[in-house]
Length: 371
Image 1 (cartoon, rainbow, N blue to C red):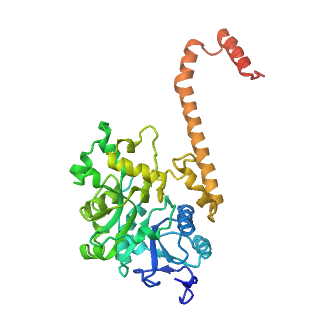
Image 2 (cartoon, rainbow, N blue to C red):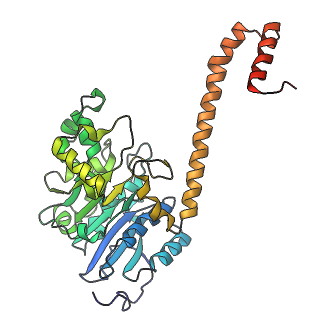
Image 3 (cartoon, rainbow, N blue to C red):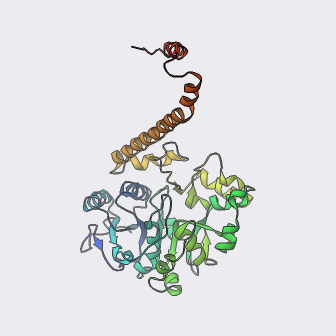
């Protein structure tokens, strides 16, 4: 495209709220990215969008559609003004409240019902050929158009194998029994994919599933990894597997590095991906503001630093650090109250001379005053 002002002929080039299905507005030469976010996760959403913008091709058009129920008007305005700095980007918000108002979904730990909303994509984007879905806990470290243009003819979607799952189930650790994937999901561990980055073949999905079918079916099951397990079951046999670099899952447990147990072929691809990551996925709530020294944290901050919510992200990091300190202090207090003091009281009863003498010595060694 030679005309950099791609949206100049649009009736409304501003970010807008939309209901019903999303209608294409940019013709054939655009990259469509869909994310799902709550108001709470808007700062992280801004980092993802910023990373996409920073690495985009100025001669291509990009459309970002955010599925939400509760993002405030103020945050929509902030994000809209931020995206305006790139003339080849358009940002739209879609309120999906009407689609999920009577739905209930199984969740646990830090997972929320928002993870299920990506199941709406084929229905909402019915006029599209393909849509790239990305989680909010990632950063994009390359031009996303290369992934968007991947050939997915005959597939429901393209995704990356889940290296955590594959590594765990390939280890000898009995805690990671592969039977759940083989017997419950009936999905071989080597073809189980991670759903945080997916190139979705909309037409293929619409040909196989009726409107609302995916969301309805997902509400009737309780899988370990929620809608990711569900998608692995429903898409079995129709998934194109991408190089690991397109969804590098960070190491969130240094004491149990799952990828160490990958089969040789997958281990080599994982290491190659880490050396030149295209998309980095901070799984397990390991976004660096929650865990400052998270694996591959150095990739996150350049995009966070130039997002409109940088100060809020820093504030969140301080808040999380304070929470950890309080938890640690509480643990120390519990140990002292439940284990240390009962022993001291037994050996050195209160108000005895030997307790007073040892207390005086202890305070002197610590440099404390008894006065």
